[in-house]
Each structure stands twice: as structure tokens, then as C-alpha cells.
Length: 115
Length: 116
Image (tube, rainbow over all chains, first blue to last red; front, side, top):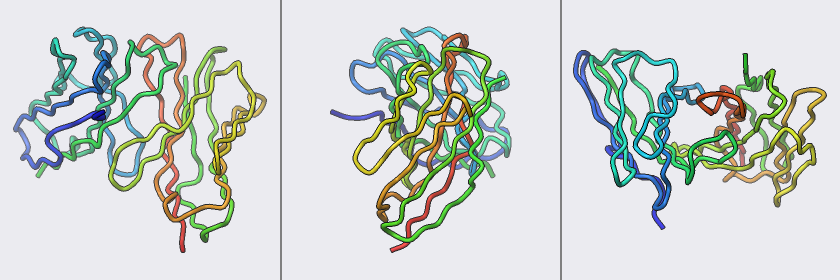
């Protein structure tokens, strides 16, 4: 079975542009979470979606948005890119809505570089 | 506020040595969950273990073992007879059952280098 898949693998953008990152969860998983991981740090929670609704949001500006589709795949959108948005963006899926107890399964991430 | 501290930024040992990665957490909740994840150079985070706050039994899985001590708010991870393939960044994470986001709070990670 395929794991969590993310696309693209790498992306280079310039300041002010916008970007869309995509994630396909493990088949049967209905919850998707997004994390930002800056080099040398642990991941920071951005969003959680379950059954196509936002269920949690981390401390990120409104430039960050996301959505989940009927097939449970998800997109993360970032507008007006800043140099500080350069990071590895990780998507994680789990079968049920995150209740704190479930291990999440992570994709390989999208490495976003802002020039 | 919840917090996870991994004081060891980087550890380097020779293959076959035992190594312990430290994790100290802070939480006001009585019900919480602790996790360890491994992140190899490829970037994917690999789930290793989950422990809830009511289960203080230590766990062993092959060469991996975990020591959970509520009295010291620690959840340490030991690799016995380390191998080069164990080289990775290891993260400890905390999740509180009462949190509205049920998000994981991550430590900064410990980079483990196993030299042949």
C-alpha cells in the first residue's frame, strides 16, 4: 500500500509569490495534518483537517490556508511568500480525527526554498 | 504550557555502542501521550513508539527501548548495539488529550551519528 505522498518534492519560489502543496493520505485515512519544519528544528503544527473540515490550526498567519477534498487529499496554500517560509512542509495522515493518541504517518515532505 | 526538551543537539558514537537520547517534557494535563519519531536524511518522519501517561511500563522492541518516568517527566530512548543505519534525527513529541488542536508538540530533535 502506498504511504502518504506529497508533491512536488522540491520547489523554488521568489518573495511575494504564492505556492500550493499537495498531499495524498494513506488509503482509508480521513485526517490530514500539515507541519512546517525549519532546518534544525522540530516540526510546527499548521493545520489539521478531518472529513473536509478544519479541526485545528496552529499559530501561523492568514497567508497560510488549506483544504481537504472529498477523496481526503489536501492542499496547503501559502500566499505572499516570505524568506522565512523556506522550510520542509510535511503532511501526515491518520485514520480517525486526531485525538492526541494516534500515531501519524508522514510523507517525505516538500522542500520549499524562497529566493 | 506544554513543552518538550531534547537537550542533546548531536550525539556521535561508534557502531555497536549503546546510546541514550534524552527527552524531558512539561505539561499540566494528567492525560497525555508521548511519541518518538525518527527522521532519516530522506526527510520522512517514521513513527517509533507511543506511550500514554497512565502506562509507565518500559518497552523494548528489538534493539530499541524506552524508559518513561513520570516522576522526572522524562521519556528516554536507548538504542543498544547501535548500527550505522540508526543514524538520523530523533524527535520526541507530546500531545495533550485536552488540547483543542490535538497537535503534537515537538522537541528540537537529537541528531544521532553512528560511525562505522
